[in-house]
Length: 342
Image (cartoon, rainbow, N blue to C red; front, side, top):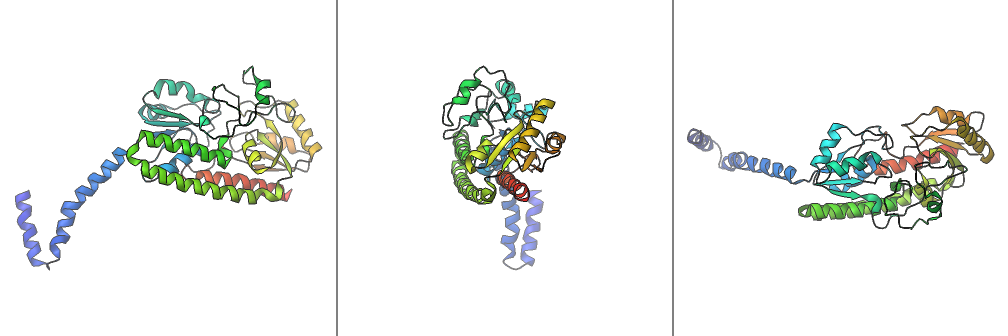
């Protein structure tokens, strides 16, 4: 073929202007090189697996230009009730790096990581340096958190800066990402882990991390302004997932229908919250898209409170590098809209 093609190209070149020779040469020589380079780029990207959408979003932002991480808890699924799929198990087995919050949130991953993630670098982001950690709230407007832990009273006395690295379930609220400053701390740990696992792409990871940090700073200022007009208005949430948002922005959650969404509250608990709404004059009660909304309707029945929806785990959002920002803005805007109109 090479001998037959060579004369044909020469004849075409003689019939065309002088510039035709390089035009013909570029496709023949450059295209295979470009294809080869593209193949090598994809092959060089490490296999990275993430547990939930907010974490996937932060990892995606830092990996832009290198590759795309895989996501386990996709769609409208919740990490509180998720069952691992065979495709998830294969992803864990093939992974070079795995990011998750920790056993307090994604309990379904604890044993699979021990069995399938042995060859991967596993980053448990609830151990990231610089995180603010808040203990679970219990009693009164916040139902007791029954997870079998015998240290509840001690936990309640811990300060936000206490050391919680003992991996005991339920020792602190695991919805850490709902404070952008915690997102910054986790992004720093994500970057450190990726650079160690894939030093060839270190400069890209570090540049992306700097851009992400700047965006998180701007987001924090934006949310502060968004919720400022409604900071003093009390409201009730479906489950106690928002105290990092509260702690950062000074908003007022008066209680939760349940602490853990895996456990449907009984009639007595619903009645208690119903009374709480009336007593406090709580202006809004927020449901969540993954869980039973009828409970919220029962709670607000006969009161002046309105209902809204908050989505702390991004169940209704499309995964990707911008999801975290959409998630946080959505929570802030939902609070502002419902509380302003109530």
